[in-house]
Length: 253
Image (cartoon, rainbow, N blue to C red):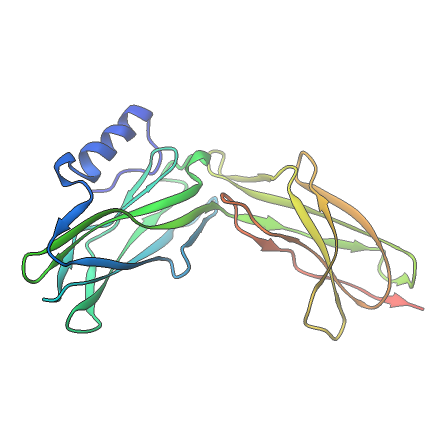
């Protein structure tokens, strides 16, 4: 059974209390079964855009002296009454006592009715069974960032430009709006202007500026050498970090 990620407050509260975990099955377990690691999508970060289908992979590693028998579907719980349930996990033994149980869930912004309030820190609830009848049930066994996808652009001009003259860099920082299914400006966020010389692989930060109320960015710098200019955004709890593609400027002496 799967619950949509965004539901009415009453429905969401009911879903979490009656579907996710029965009251009698609060955090706990029987015997020596332990959850030792939880990983979501490889790096515990999930970025959702405004279209397409995202397959979210959840891996829970557990141990017991008798070995791991299996696991119930994992529940993913987040802000704004966000709630998703994975398919049935498949458990693979790493040793006689330890297994990693893996399952996935598909999330599509057009059909899952995501709310922007769903962005933030989500948690994985997991139930693991051991071969000897022991088990462990743990709410918030692991956490991950569930974020609104971001985009960042950069344009530096004029091209070419004489050394020592002013270069104007413009761009826009936007992020997914799950309610309109469009990207909109991310206002008042700090963004770094960075420069990479023509034959270098490393960007250096020149200054930090703020996006305006519509996510637009504009700043100036002095032309020093041929190279690439870009903007870089460090990210927030609800929006992932992103770098704009570098824009090359030919500097003439």
